[in-house]
Length: 98
Image (cartoon, rainbow, N blue to C red; front, side, top):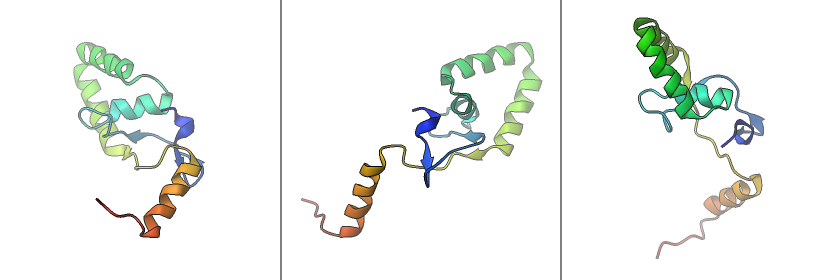
């Protein structure tokens, strides 16, 4: 999913967010990858290499990012017509489970 498809009230999602849905620990690497439109595995590889050469600095930056970045809000990233369809069906009340 590209950053351009993230929509929240027809605005692009901006800023750094922790992506716990796609993240392993706190979602910092996934959030940075989403912001810069990189692959998450590339950012994780850079983080591991950074851990090997500057362990405490990397740990400090990671935990600072964990505290400073907000968690990415859950938003619908699909077609607006489909979103409108499901909104009307949810409020319709004509659905039955069988």
